[in-house]
Each structure stands twice: as C-alpha cells, then as structure tokens.
Image (cartoon, rainbow, N blue to C red):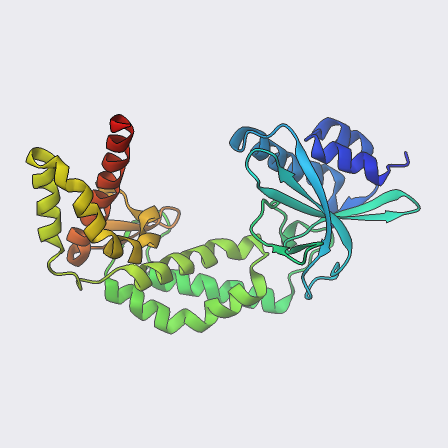
Amino acid sequence: MRTSYNQIVHCIANLDIQLLNELLDENRTYNDISKTDFISRISEVFDYFRKECGEIKLVPVKGVCGSSLCVNCNSPGITFRGMVSGKYMSLIINVEDDKVTDIFQCKEFKLSNGNVIKDQIKMNIYEEDKIGFVGGVDFHINIQKCEAALSTLKQGKGLKDITFLYYNDILDWVNIYDEVFLEVKDKYLEYRTMLPYIKLYDTIDLILTYLPNGAFINIQESNDCYEEYKISKPHLIPTWVKVLKPYFETHLPLVKYLNATHIASGFLEVSAGYNIRLDISRDKPFLNFMINYLNAQEWVINNQKREN
C-alpha cells in the first residue's frame, strides 16, 4: 500500500491508532523499531492525549528538527498540538515519491518562527529497543560503575532491604560518584537501562541542594503560629502565607517528596524501588512547615472562593 504523507498526518491529528496501524508497512521499521512496537508506543501517547489532556483532535503545525546533534537536523516535520491542553508531540516524517518511509519522534522541534519546542510528550523509545542494538564495551562498563555506586549506597544490603541513610552518607556518596553519573547522564540519557541510576542520582542531588540540613532552626515557631491560627485566628492565615512565601518557594522542588506519613516517621523516601530512606530528624520541623504551607495555601484559595 502506498501510504501518503497527508494520510499519516490525518491519522495522527485525529488520534486514529487503528487506521495508522493499517497504513504503516509491516515490513518497515519506524524510529528504528518494528512497526508493532512503534504502534504500541504511539498508542500510549494517543491515550495520554485523550485521557489525561481531554483531546479529541490535534492541530498539525509544520517545522523542522532543531537539534544540531541529530541526524534529522533541519528535516521537515510536524508538531501536533492539543486543542485543549496545548501540549505537543513532534514527528519527523520521511517521504520518498509521496510514500512515507519512516517516522521519527523529534525532541527539539523548531517552528517556522524560530521557536524551539523541547517540553513535549514523547514516545517511550530507548536505544535498547532499536533493532540491531549493541551496547558496546563502554556501555557495559558504565552499567558496572552504576551498579557499584548503588551497592555502596545500599551499604551492601539487598535491594528489597530498607537502607536508612543520614545526610552525610548521601553527601559523601555524591562526592565520590559525581563524575560517574555526570558522564552517564551525558552519554546514556536515552538508555532505559541507565534511567533508574540517573533518576536516583538526580533525586539525591536535588535533596542535597534544597534540604536545609538544620539551617532553619527557628522554623518551628512558624509551625506553632500556623497551628494557633487554624484553631483561633484563621483570618491571619493569609498573612502567614504571604510572609513565609519566600522560604517556601526557595525550597519548592522538595514538594514532590513530601509525604506526611513518612515525615512523621522521620524519613524522606529517596527511592521506593531501591528501598532507600533518608533520616530527616534535623529537618523535620522544616518539612512540616512545607506541608503546613501547602495546606494554608489551599485554605486561602478555598476561602477566597467562598467569599466570591
């Protein structure tokens, strides 16, 4: 079947996975993976657009690959923009004699106005998925380095055993393995095998960057004020939120690690998969402040709605 460019664009814009499956050639690879795998990956993106973004149709916008490091640099393509969410998925569609011969996802798509789109929805396609993948010696050496780093962090315990660490433990670990992970992130960000190690390193690096490590010794006073205001002076909560906003926003990246149950038990969960926990005894008042601030913020918003 001769599959035209316009047919493919129409299928994707309408999130029509069934017709796309019928149009693509069984004997071709797309994005260096089999047609079956490609359909599976792009189907996940279609589902995300429908279920998470509320989309029923995407708007195709022309442009080119904007990455100077990519073999498809300056190749023409299409970014598909959600009409409801405004989120994007960008593809480079190769055509020969009006027949689509390949489709690649594009991670740095340049629009005709020169703007480059980087923050977009991507298919989960990794180097290991590609037909003919061979890791090479350096790849396997770096896996061994990452495994050694993880074993050190786990202090020799099994992956299913809970490892309880202190602030200086993770600080020392980063000082030792920083160069290893910077190299891995630079070379192997598109490799599924490396992602758990990269995610673990990034989590620890973020915690070290934003956890005050006992620096806010008077923060408990703010917590006490908030508890008092909740009970007897709720009209003062908006002022409390306004005054303490700089302290909260400076440490905003920690929010995704806030779990009231874990904090009450004295730890942050660094990695659920590897069962690694961090002692937060010195920062428990501060992390409680972060939780209090989120609750106070929500109270202010809801109260404003009631008043309006």
